[in-house]
Amino acid sequence: MMTLRCNPTDSVRITSPFGPRNFSGLEFHLGMDLGPIVPGKEGDNIYTVADGTVRVSQANAGNQATGYGYYVVVEHKDYCSLYAHLQKLEVRVGQKVKAGEVDSTGPHLHFEIRECAYNKFWEKGKSKGEYKYVIDTQPLLLKRAFYYSIFKNHKD
Ligand SMILES: [Zn+2]
Image (cartoon, rainbow, N blue to C red; front, side, top):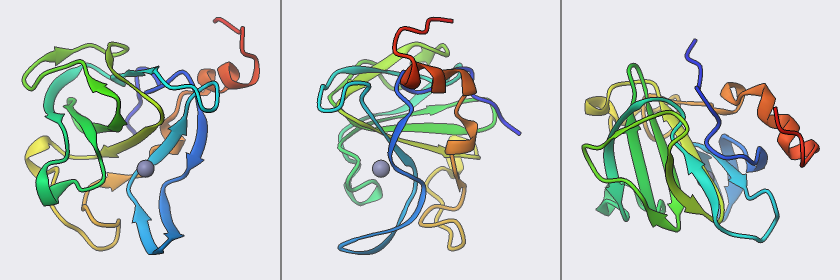
């Protein structure tokens, strides 16, 4: 199983989990949403979860990604990670990034992983939601980070 080198945010406060949800009609939530450490306070760092290459760094890509707002996709060795609802973009397409590097800042993060190379990233599927290679990211969060949200000054 893949492992993240770091969490995408210091906060692990999940405000909306992966999977089916019902807002104004049933939809499949392709990622999980992480709220900021201090609720309502914007500007937390968003980190690349592993070394990789930036494939997308832009606002919504037409009909491919409606609802993402500013978003970044990083291609890693055997999967891609996506960071959406960003305040601003700190990386450009083609840039090599290291685990833990700041991609952006955001009021809350929509985080996705698709277990494929970027050339298959937008392939549609049925059983796992709208895109074929999407997986649940919640089990991948690093345990250590849970302590950050419980003990605010815990440092190790
Ligand atoms: Zn979301």
